[in-house]
Image 1 (cartoon, rainbow, N blue to C red):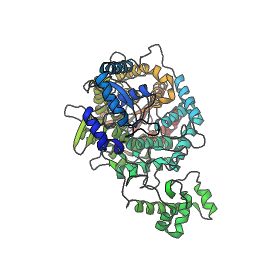
Image 2 (image 1 turned 135 degrees about the vertical axis):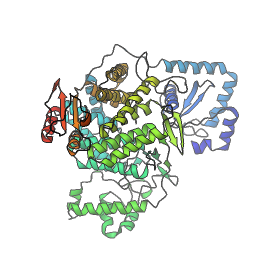
Image 3 (image 1 turned 90 degrees about the horizontal axis):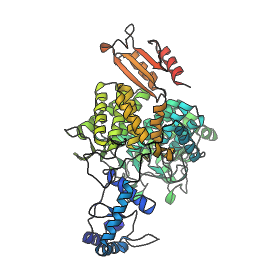
Length: 625
């Protein structure tokens, strides 16, 4: 539409003569995008981008749609066909148009009413699971047909449901989906990282755009799956995603870029695909055919115009090795060398455009994943990356008065941060504290939660508004809950506040989270599977907590061994508290100068533990069903 309409002089002349044209970056102004997308859905029954809205000078909408060509074609109305009619109507029937726009705004303002009679119930978790099970693609993994999105928070919820209910199929659904996605073409087997979604059911042909938030949430999901299964493939994929982000999506100061485009040289996917002859020319006749066959690189192509998307769909490497009379190690070595050579050759191509704006919310998700990786994989480097990310936000995206901002690019910070920015950063700070146990991160989390409450909290009905009380006042002030490609700020805030309450022993955060969960209970019950991050918050709320407090010196090996014992397994309902032995209190003493663990659950506390084997044994008895 940009090329067809907005860069066309004839269209520009009409727009400039009669309209004030405003182009909005929906990633920088998600408040505007969210409100007027709701308008489009209400008016037309559907939404999507590009989003086109006509409104009065008071910002009240009266016409909405998505894609419009220059002239009407294939059943789609053209801009030059309806804009003159809109202009004529504005001159002759302005009162009628204004009345219509006022009605639209009133409808939006009264579209969501809190049902105070709906009580929170654990049953909703089972309903969410059942709905996901019905949507599950047993053949290829994931949910639904095409296009197919990763939706990592669905998988994260299923892992928690498996952990706390014992439902084995929930875990099987996660394993199938993560394995199928990694084997598919949606995964970049040469440069790593996931594309935004698959255009087909079996994850072969992606929309090649890579988004930071997808890779942040997916790396976190693979790490949790590794905790649950011990399958090294999951930890390897998680690390490969982090390698991609560090190599291609990180600036020199520790911030993370937003996205890489799908197109290069004006062609979608051109950077990523190969013909079979290209592969054979690069790899040679000795290893080229083996590599090409293994990755389904066909003479006729598996994609457009004879090109191929590398994939391992349905490929079992040991079986393939046997079929060509080679051992697995030899084949793996060939594939490794082939990937390296093709990556080097691909790197000489014209790269896709990189969206180098740095968004607070998406950076927070990436920080969260690096902190998680440091815990699960016992890697100090990842903790340092997470800490650098926090430092970047507080240096570049925080005003002197402490107000968080949403976007940084080329030395400029702009836009008051939204709920997502605050909620995601709060969760990241808690995770980084759980990784480093440095008090400054907990202090920052407490202050951020206070600011979030003051700027976004609805005192009358509970829940958080999307934009702050100090922000531009739009036609409505929405409260969002739907967990789409990215979890909603309210869902993440609910879980973050519950965790903050546990790690600080400050009940005010628990009270606020309870009110928030109650506020949105009726909305979530309409179709729980659409609110899976919110379901994670409910799962945490309903699950009996186990408190682990470790007293020792942070640098000592025995202290670190206890941290790792908790982190290497999947205990999503647990927060670790650290008590510095040099400042120890009477409640949590260190015994015999050794790191000492205090575990309390089911309204009882175990005797203090100094032996790491005993610590692990009690952990397993406490957490495993």
